[in-house]
Length: 191
Image (cartoon, rainbow, N blue to C red; front, side):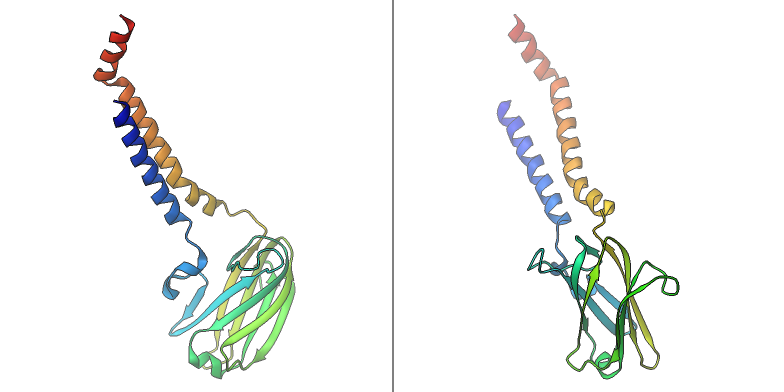
């Protein structure tokens, strides 16, 4: 019986590990079409990466930036057509372009190498990155940024797998304790 409980516990732990590992996928591990840092309008795509090497030299962020401070923004112009038109970038504090303060502005220019680089200092709060391409038709991409804010949705998604595993393990233990075989075994130990 102890062997059966051990095997069932190991199976539940493997299930929990599989669910938890799937929830912890990093930004760089997905296909470009499924990447949350890609914005698409028609056939044109741009990709945003944010870096804070003073805190974590190898980390790459998109819309959730863990700390306030100097942040390097890199926009990759995925499509060749975007490299042949002037493209500008604005970072505004808040979510309303007309009402909120512009923090950083890169005037529209050509980027034949397909990369727009900018640096800005971000404090805790909400920001919006607006990328405009002055082509025909004009294109506009937006990225909401959350700086040094807790993302409860990510915490919930990460915790769901282990919680389900714990509930299954509890249910299994309850069923095992109520089984007739265990009750007979307890009765035999009392006598």
